[in-house]
Length: 96
Image (tube, rainbow, N blue to C red; front, side):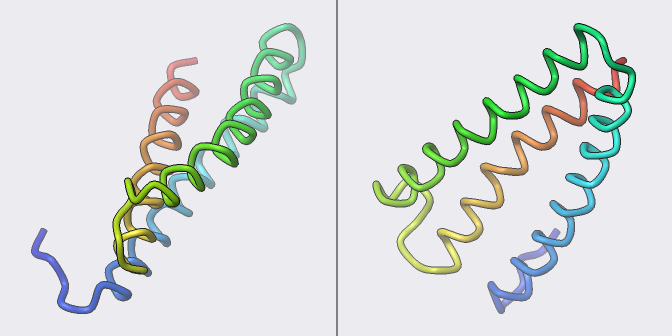
């Protein structure tokens, strides 16, 4: 896909796309949690652990310049980082 000239337009599309993928993960997680049992407990713990890790990791990456130097670059780097996590969860949860 060709790069758009306006980085904010690209970020808007990427944010929307991440939101769609995240909503799929939410649905898959709700089904797993609703089933109950040990698998649901493990999923809940994993979910909370991921949220805590992200709340530490993402700001650290931004502060150390690993996400970029400009506003659009940091936003794009943040979305890319989050998308990797969301995509991995979608794949894992879709397996069963």
